[in-house]
Length: 266
Image (tube, rainbow, N blue to C red; front, side):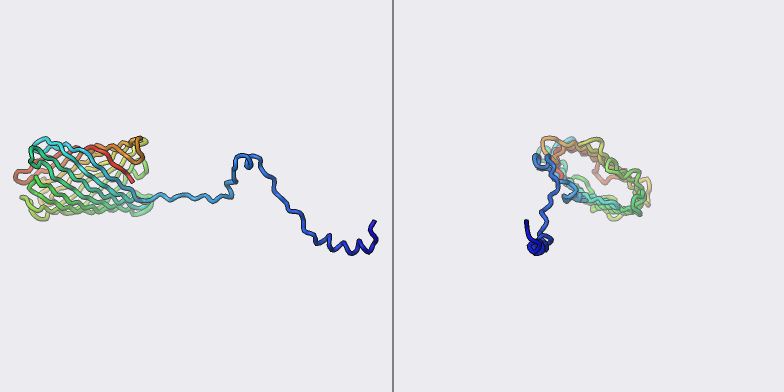
């Protein structure tokens, strides 16, 4: 038994002694499986890029004055956000028959549209295109249009825009050489039919303002089918049909190109 003096001296030491460390109960599953508390982990969500694009190469079947088989190359870039869409594309087609060029055709086109208000349907647009065709008398054609559009749908599954506007076209060499003021009525769409299958296209008619019965009509259709053999690889089949109600000397009224091949998306 300690004497009173020893008890009195030992009291301060007992009061200031550090308390034993406390530990939280350990979940046996965490020890066995290495599971961590998700509430304490930082979750990083990668933001989806507004940009997408593709490169394609394949075969071409064309029909103007003759039927020919050749090759085609294409590229596209798209930027989409909550307020706007910007689509640009390039296509080149070359066909030769008995060392005679039947098709040496390229077209580069770009279109931008922007909503007037987020979540709305009304929008304004601007579009431009450049064509070169060795076998037609116009040889080079440049077009530019602007106007108003209305989205019938603007979702991830279906984007469908109706549009109308005015602009002009320029031909390097033809009966309609020089600038021609024109009106534009058209539509474009992008439909994700199901997982891995997409259908996109556009249709338009461009009437000459000083002679409304003179017009130029274009229809483009494209089907993309994703291939499971490789990520981002697609099989495509496309059609472009041009009809000119007033063609130049030696030109065809209707020009049709059917292309198919593979595209790689990024």
